[in-house]
Amino acid sequence: MTALAMIILGYLSGSISAGILVARLMGLGDPRDAGSGNPGATNLLRLGGRKAAIITLLVDAAKGLIPVLAAQALQLESLWLALVGLAAFLGHLYPVFFGFRGGKGIATGFGVMLGWHWLLGAAGLLTWVLVAAAFRMSSLSALLSFALAPVYLLLLTGDVALTAAMALMAVITAWRHRENIQRILRGEEPKIGKR
Image (cartoon, rainbow, N blue to C red; front, side, top):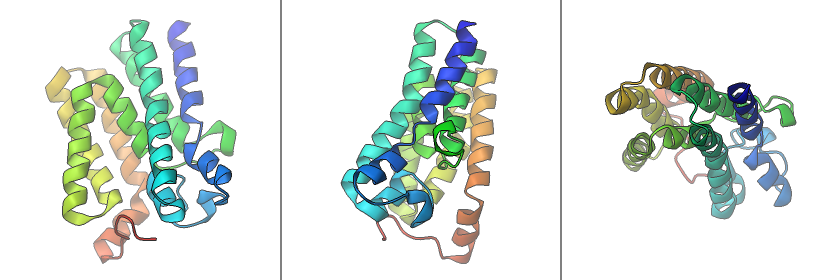
C-alpha cells in the first residue's frame, strides 16, 4: 500500500505544471498555445525570459526528485523506486490538473535521474551541457542525455529495474520530440535563447 501511494503521489507531483503556473503569474498566457507549445523551461525562456525559465526548470526538476527521495527514505525496493520516478515523469507529460496536456519531461526526468543516483543526474546534466555548448539546441541535448542515461545507470548500479525504467523514459522522450527530430534533420531547429 505504501508503494502504491508513493506511485500515486509521484504522478500527482509530476502533474503540477510549473511552466503553466509561472506563465499565468507573469501574464504570458498558456505556453502550450505559444512558441513551441511546450510548457517547459526552454519555451518559457523564449516567452518570458530567464526568470520564468529558471523557476520553471527548478520546480519541474524538484517534482521528479522529491517523490523519488521520499520513496528512498521509505526504503522501497528498486522496482518501486523505478515506478515512482516513472510516475512523476508521466505526470509531467500527462498532468491530471491541466487536461493531460503537459510538456516533454526533460527537467522532471533529470530530477528523477538525480533521485535515483546523483552521479546519473550529474552525467546526464554534463551530457546536456556539452551537447548544448556544441550545437546550441536544447532538444538535441535532451535527446542525447536521455539516450545515454540507461547506459550510465547500468554502469553505475547494475540495477535492471531502474535501467529499464530509464530506457522507457528515453524512448518516450524521443517520441515526444519527434517533431524536433524532424526539424533537426532539416536544419530548422531553433537555437537556445532564440525567441
